[in-house]
Amino acid sequence: MARTEGHLLWLAGLLVAAAAAAAESPQSFIAQMDEALRNRNYQGVFVHEHGGQSETLRITHRVDNGQVSERIVSLDGSGREYIRRGSQITSYLPDQNLVVVDTTPDAGLLLSELRVPDLANSGQYRLRELAATRTSGRQARVIAVEPLDAMRYGYRLWIDEVSGMPLKTQLLSSRGEVVEQLIFTDLRLPAKIPDSELQPAVDAQGYRWLRRGVAAGTAVGIPADSAWVAAELPPGFRLTARSVQVLPGTSGPVTHLVYSDGLASVSVFVESAIGEPASGGVRQETLAVTRIGSTSAVSTTVQGHRVTAIGEVPPETVRAIASSLRAGAEPVGRGLPEMGPVAARPATGRNYPHP
Image 1 (cartoon, rainbow, N blue to C red):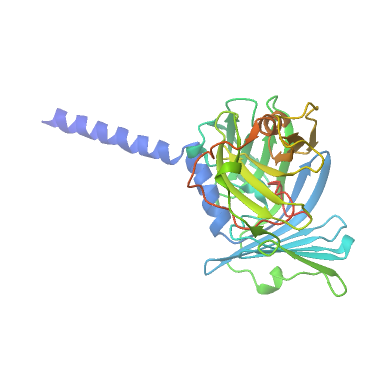
Image 2: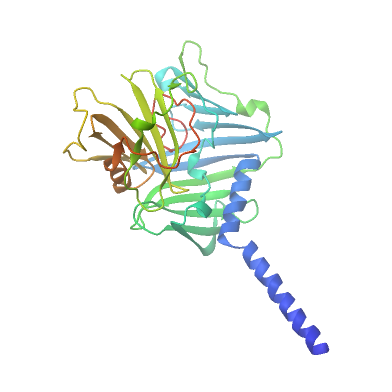
């Protein structure tokens, strides 16, 4: 009897140890980071390095009765400020005497580099915990998010053991090169943040105001016989959203498609190309990719339409998606959420909004 009780106690100990190990898994640390980013108040200064450039910014993030407000201020001379209140993002651009107001129903974090990987729905990454270290004066767990192929970037996350906040993030090429990096040099977690911390310091008197977003485009629906889809996608990518809209400055409806692997995403815009033949495949041209930091973009002509693909992915990924786009095919994944009207500019998935 005593031997049986001892065996049961041993099994119970194993179960407790297994539960503790699961709670301390890399996925659990990423879940803690998601919770902290969305539901904590935080203020700090960070350095953002990308495309051979470095910028220092200050961020304030407040959650008050479920309402999210954010403010990012450039400390490097331009004086630019970005303020989010719920679904509205206001960009103050003193170097252009301009204020841009964007309205979007699905506004995420202003600092999109801190987005949390949707690894459960991807299957294209593996998680690995590296040796713990100290950064920004805090003890951090280091999590590597490693892609299974070269069609997407890898990530490295330094997560504060106490608060769950990301202290440092890196975007890595397939060769392990740092493509983009964000480092907090100061981070505070106040219980309360006053309204004054979320007010712009810019005096916008005399500035030109530009409002876009919901009013910038008119949704026109998606005719089944003119649907645009990618005939062949990189592994793991799927169509996650689509819309057809009439946008200011364009000669006809613009199709907007979003392809994602759960972490990386590519936006594709299709519009009529005046003077191009309305039939045939991709025009015989070099698909030259423009790359700024982590963002890659390519533009080509398909069946008389101008196709532009842009995303925070390696150049070969936007090239592959743009070159495989075809019209008149059966739409992939019927029942996808339709996107509301979008602003008359590509959403690159980069950091704070850019005009």
